[in-house]
Length: 276
Image (cartoon, rainbow, N blue to C red):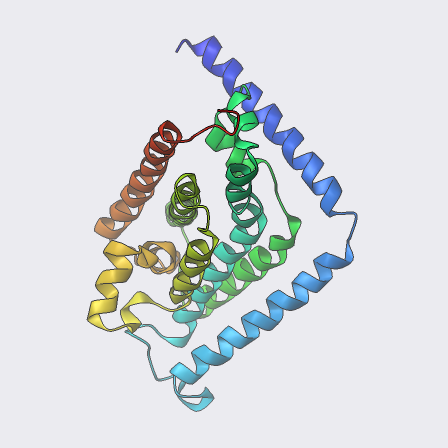
């Protein structure tokens, strides 16, 4: 593809994304009270998660001396903060879009999506956006930064760039897993339960993966890559990311995204149009 043609195509996608999100946000923001309700919900959930984490550490009296899988109290809060960011990302982008794929297949509107002059996976993944995940994202970043500072993390431009890259990689991994499950609706209509199971399984990412028994560590690293969602980025935020794990996180994101692209094309070859 020539450079002018590529630039034109990227411009078309950028303009489409701007129109998608402007329309979605204007509709959602008609109910501004929802933002404050979501903010209170996020703070309540976060307080509950911190309380449970405190119990795992043995209570307030032991938080300064105990550890959870080799992680101190403040370091474990960094993991929880990153999980909260990803949960907000899920609320803002993944749930509003990927939960609709089943409906597109059921009512036949996927036919119209496939006829659009845009990549169908792009359209299905970015058509909607919800501002109600923003409180979770902001609260997660605030907790992460505060806890990392208390843990004595020293930030450098390279370290911040690496942390940002791994956080983006974790979002890509989460998106790819969810999209593949949603794409199964081409064959199995009732896959919504499977995506909910995935979401609740990934709740394990609230805590460092080393806090789990060895068997679960293997599952959360190589089967459901929970370790690459929160623990590996948290290591980078704390300034102690190991090169092997960093490369592994970026490679996992690349592999899962390319896998989702391949799987979607494969699924479409088996899709029976509603008009056929």
